[in-house]
Amino acid sequence: MITSAVVPVAGMGTRMLPATKSQPKEMLPVGKKPIVQYVVEELVAAGIEEILFVTGRGKHSIENHFDFDHQLMRLLRETGKEDLLEELEFERFTTHFFYTRQRLQRGLGDAILCAERFAGDAPIAVALGDSIIGMSTSSCVRRMIEAADNDRNVCIIAVEEVDPKLVSHYGVIQPKGSAAGALFEIADLVEKPAVNEAPSNLVIAGRYILPPRIFEAIRRTEPGANGEIQLTDAIRLLREYGCRLLALRLPPGERRYDIGNFESYFETFIEFALADREFGPRLRERVKRLL
Ligand code: G1P
Image (cartoon, rainbow, N blue to C red; front, side, top):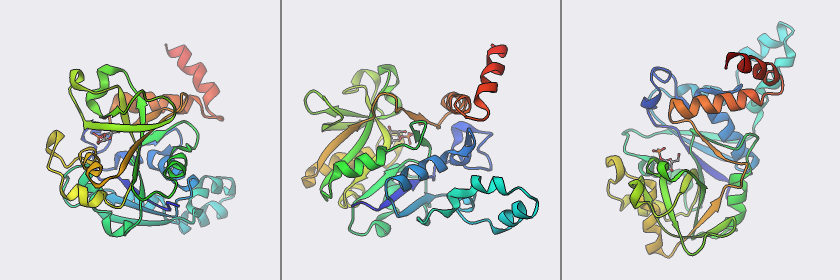
């Protein structure tokens, strides 16, 4: 079983300035929780026991968030706010957290290469720290681990269908055959293609199962889209090592919330806030009045 996961959080978040000037985009709240907490909860629910964050400058608040804050707990107890301790339940995760830095911003492939020693000789799960899957704790990574079925030579990528006009923002896969069902084979994949050159509208949704040979493949990968070492390009090379590439399609009703820009961040925040059990109903009324 796969028990280790990597969460890349090194990106500068420049598309979300000024909000991200002195805080990581992964720590921006969506509803009551920071984005990266949703990601970690998905991994914990998948049985992941060790998580490596690949961080960069200015990302300390992520470490603080997943650490115990004894002073805060004591304060809540002493001031009769025990009910708020429930909000800190996630601190009790028995997961082991590790942190390493990507020293140069050379792309997602390079960020994953920073996890080589952590992974050792075992397959790993990867969950991008700025993408939430589904509105309640997703079983996406769990399903991917099950689909990998202890095969050391398989790479699985979560994919979702998007408006064909938007494909150039993503990695895009070309299915082998008809892409029927939830799990199907990938013939090829390309990072950020031009709209008229994209092989489909099935895009990479920020969750991966990677075999041990991925590191060898990344080292052989030349800079690609945006001049960066792309994970998508390294995955293409895995085919040369005889690895199978599979896609797991997100089911309807479980879409990906990408927090890379303000447009999708605002939409995501509103959707999660409206679904909040405590504040959602009143917010809905307020929003209706504002429209
Ligand atoms: C990365 C991946 C891309 C994927 C996307 C999903 O791109 O390189 O293949 O579709 O995440 O969010 P980025 O968002 O870093 O440009």
